[in-house]
Length: 79
Image 1 (cartoon, rainbow, N blue to C red):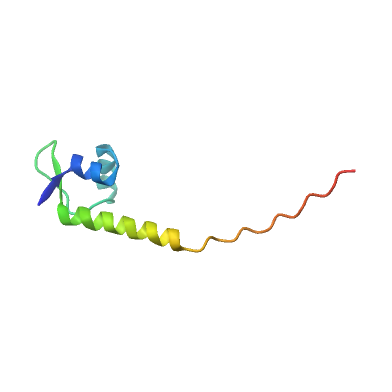
Image 2 (cartoon, one colour):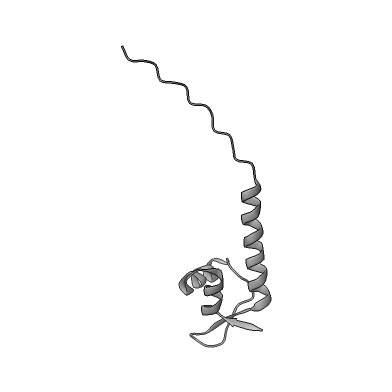
C-alpha cells in the first residue's frame, strides 16, 4: 500500500517540504515514487521501517552513558 507524502509527513512529524529535501538528499523513508508532478507516495512498509529505526536510534541515545564532564577548578580569590 502506498501513502501520500502529506500523510507520511504527518506521521513523522515534519513538513512536506522537509520530505522533499530529504528525497533530494537521499534521507528519510526509501522507495518513494511520483504518481504525477505534484503527488509523491511512499510504501507503507518503508515508512514503518523508517519510524522504527528512528525510535531505536532514540532509545540507544537515551541508554548511552553520559560523557563525564571534566571538573572545573575553583577560582582563585582576588586580592
